[in-house]
Length: 67
Image 1 (cartoon, helix red, strand yellow):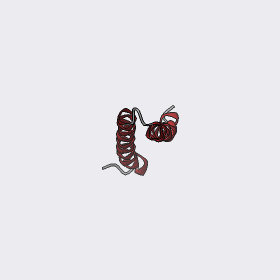
Image 2 (spheres, helix red, strand yellow):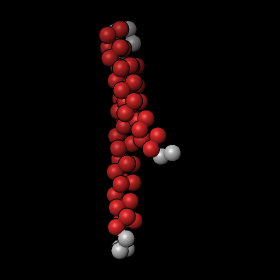
Image 3 (cartoon, one colour):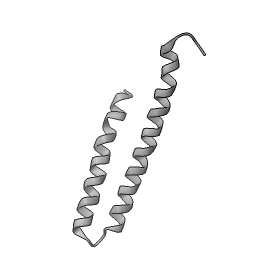
Protein backbone atom coordinates (compact mmCIF):
# COMPACT_ATOMS: atom_id res chain seq x y z
CA UNK A 1 0.00 0.00 0.00
CA UNK A 2 1.46 3.32 -1.03
CA UNK A 3 0.99 6.68 0.62
CA UNK A 4 -0.20 8.24 -2.62
CA UNK A 5 -4.04 8.23 -2.57
CA UNK A 6 -4.26 8.80 -6.33
CA UNK A 7 -2.52 5.50 -7.12
CA UNK A 8 -4.66 3.62 -4.59
CA UNK A 9 -7.90 5.05 -5.99
CA UNK A 10 -7.03 4.11 -9.57
CA UNK A 11 -7.38 0.36 -8.99
CA UNK A 12 -11.00 0.43 -7.73
CA UNK A 13 -11.97 2.77 -10.59
CA UNK A 14 -10.41 0.45 -13.16
CA UNK A 15 -12.20 -2.54 -11.63
CA UNK A 16 -15.50 -0.64 -11.54
CA UNK A 17 -15.03 0.40 -15.17
CA UNK A 18 -14.33 -3.21 -16.19
CA UNK A 19 -17.46 -4.52 -14.42
CA UNK A 20 -19.57 -1.77 -16.01
CA UNK A 21 -18.28 -2.67 -19.48
CA UNK A 22 -18.96 -6.35 -18.86
CA UNK A 23 -22.49 -5.46 -17.76
CA UNK A 24 -23.07 -3.37 -20.87
CA UNK A 25 -21.68 -6.17 -23.07
CA UNK A 26 -24.25 -8.52 -21.53
CA UNK A 27 -26.99 -5.96 -22.21
CA UNK A 28 -25.88 -5.73 -25.87
CA UNK A 29 -25.86 -9.52 -26.17
CA UNK A 30 -29.34 -9.72 -24.69
CA UNK A 31 -30.54 -7.06 -27.14
CA UNK A 32 -29.16 -9.13 -30.02
CA UNK A 33 -30.94 -12.22 -28.64
CA UNK A 34 -34.18 -10.23 -28.42
CA UNK A 35 -33.73 -9.15 -32.05
CA UNK A 36 -33.26 -12.76 -33.17
CA UNK A 37 -36.27 -13.95 -31.18
CA UNK A 38 -38.50 -11.16 -32.50
CA UNK A 39 -38.14 -12.02 -36.20
CA UNK A 40 -41.63 -11.92 -37.68
CA UNK A 41 -43.06 -9.61 -35.02
CA UNK A 42 -42.57 -5.96 -36.05
CA UNK A 43 -43.42 -4.46 -32.64
CA UNK A 44 -41.05 -6.72 -30.79
CA UNK A 45 -38.36 -6.07 -33.42
CA UNK A 46 -38.79 -2.30 -33.04
CA UNK A 47 -38.49 -2.55 -29.27
CA UNK A 48 -35.44 -4.79 -29.54
CA UNK A 49 -33.72 -2.43 -31.97
CA UNK A 50 -34.46 0.55 -29.71
CA UNK A 51 -33.03 -1.36 -26.75
CA UNK A 52 -29.84 -2.13 -28.72
CA UNK A 53 -29.58 1.50 -29.85
CA UNK A 54 -29.95 2.71 -26.24
CA UNK A 55 -27.22 0.31 -25.09
CA UNK A 56 -24.88 1.62 -27.78
CA UNK A 57 -25.63 5.21 -26.80
CA UNK A 58 -24.78 4.46 -23.17
CA UNK A 59 -21.48 2.87 -24.26
CA UNK A 60 -20.27 5.90 -26.25
CA UNK A 61 -19.03 7.83 -23.17
CA UNK A 62 -16.98 4.83 -22.02
CA UNK A 63 -15.05 4.69 -25.26
CA UNK A 64 -14.81 8.47 -25.66
CA UNK A 65 -13.39 8.80 -22.12
CA UNK A 66 -10.46 6.46 -22.87
CA UNK A 67 -9.06 8.73 -25.62
